[in-house]
Image 1: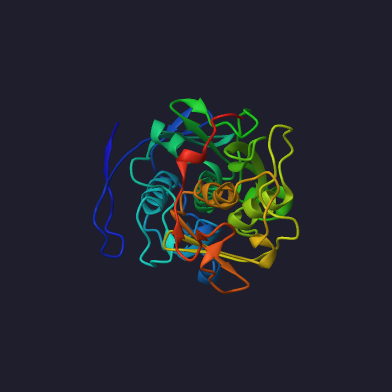
Image 2: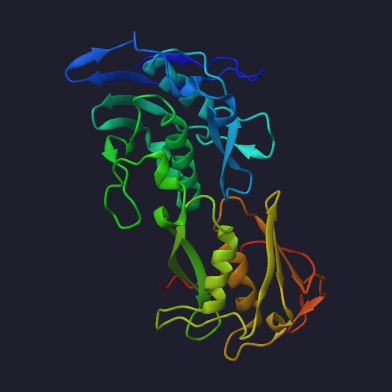
Length: 319
């Protein structure tokens, strides 16, 4: 495996990326000499870009980038390096985090196949979809790279249904008609109403739709479909606003959220929201407001005006 040295990207610290490139064309080993990338010479207003995630990990964002490489091998290498470096814009996050790298890249008539190390499996749910979208949209700017497939430890990357995802292109991440099902974990009450039970929820997500936090809370308001689980959120509760900043998710409900739920302990109601949101990698704490204002207590005098963290003691372990 060749040791590649990251180029200085706008005065950022140099990093190493292990990568082996084999660009294959009908039985020919291609290591250079390709024609100049026509897409990279297009109107600057249309690119090229390195695609990043916003800090809340809710959407894909373009970051203007001008590559120096002139052939396919060099462009693939350079774009992967750029995807591994934190953007200068502090509101953005890189697509490829520390510990994740491409071991091998194969370009054939079928498309570009990227072979990641095992650390890629640490990317899950919405984070994984967004990271994959950023990588594919970035690489598909290269003339001759129309489709990209992901492999982890030599095996095809599978979707939530357990089937290989296969080759994808930039258009697969544009509109809701091409949205993917992302599995997230939410928590409802058990039958006794004294513990939380995990439930896997599939959410259609394309990287540019409503915040995933909103989808999670809407699912909690709707309630479970499993027979051994109970709805925690009081009837008539409406989500007025949800935003995430610096690891804190701010959730604003209407006054119905303060109502008691028959057969469900108040702390189970609260932590169904907190634990569900805390499943997202971008959230560490949750703060509640009612109609835009903090309330001192919740139901049975539970302090309600502070920050809430995940409560593992309420998990039943049943599913």
